[in-house]
Image 1 (cartoon, rainbow, N blue to C red):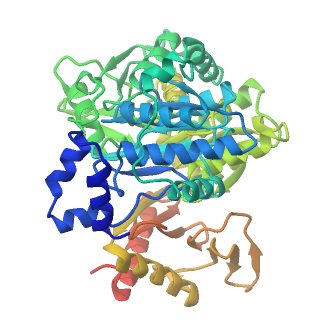
Image 2: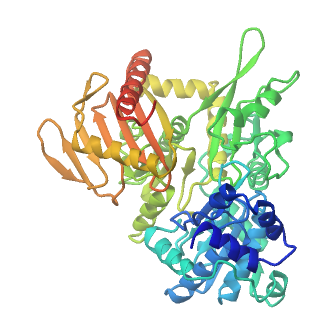
Image 3: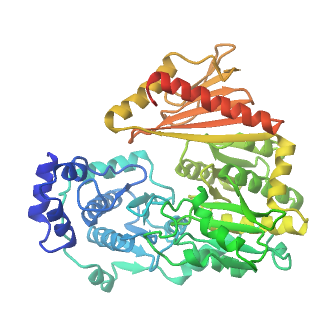
Length: 582
């Protein structure tokens, strides 16, 4: 169907007077807007649905959510899985509404639904799936995207984000369903009938117990003098994080301007804790006259699966600034803390492992190697980390994984969930800061000591956004050109290895020998210049976007920074020559 045909169908079938009907009336006659909203359909992929909210087949609304939920319910019902599903939702606009639409659709498909009664972090959904032994799970969230977005992320019965094969089956079922399908029952009626059940306190308590079970030095927090400032960025972390803080005896303050759940994110339009603006309100609190000397500032994203860290730095004139840690840096800090503490406690398992994504800093290998800990690389996306944990769990070896993380501020210790968890990360960060406080050093000094010991690892991500299908093709053509005409050097550094994750092979440039890569096929290309540097190129499969991850390392910080700058400049020059950028 054309965009106009779909628009006309919606005009005919959406109940008159509804909010969506009024929105459709408002765009009648606007061909560009109709094309934007109806020219494509939201694609159900491995992360479910995600898009801008509004009327249309390419928007998140009650009809696209219901259609996807019906298809997901059919998938669960016909698979050898329990006929049940857990649902959570974050603080975004319409998240509660979409969760009720989803619950209603699933219940009408014969799926017993367990729904969190209030906004809850994504990792709590992963926990509920396994704890309640459901056939799957759904969380309504668009993670750290701007306020205009929302999403529907689906999970398997193992608590992992849904993988490609089941996602493709759900999408195929979804395409066979009507675009507009009204429910036969109301949400309230299905709750009254017991087909939708609100999740009780026992699940919350069990989750908190599982997180606290991952503690290593909780006894170091009380009496340490540690002072923490925390912001949930208007999201779901407020209740869970502060509950854990109270159980741990953490002395904390809140960034009050960001504690109210608000899907408009008024103080932080892009609520991503990886970015500097996410700490704008926190620095106001830390720098205010009479403010405590905070040792640690923590921020979690709206669905509280990511956490970022900063520490205040006071200048001689009394002004306060922040030193923010990247996900790579704080991941290495936590890894060193876990390995060092467990070595001293005598609890470090044989064959211990740290799991990381391929675009996470190679500094992990240096830190892990010092403790004889194996580093396991997986493709980008925490579902691959979750799958690795699951694979070892089936062998009774999941405790071999002592830590897992990815560069985008996603951390996990333990196997109680199959996703990144900001709650356990906040706990571990508080423990580490308390230990440092007792040793009379700051977290910044601790990071500097790691650099001095292992070398200075610098990293940068360059994201190139292009236009439409032509831009998408240009990204693909650029990567393919690098495959056909491989580079021999980058920024004056000799290329030693080229890993092509699409065809699953790694070339040793000196010997010409190749080895098989044990990864799912993915359009990713990696150029490695020994330990000095690396460039990893990854085009989006669904958007006209190219991401390039750069890494450089040296015993001298200035040289590492210079290597990084040279790498970025060289790749940018090649992109310019190819026409990827102007």
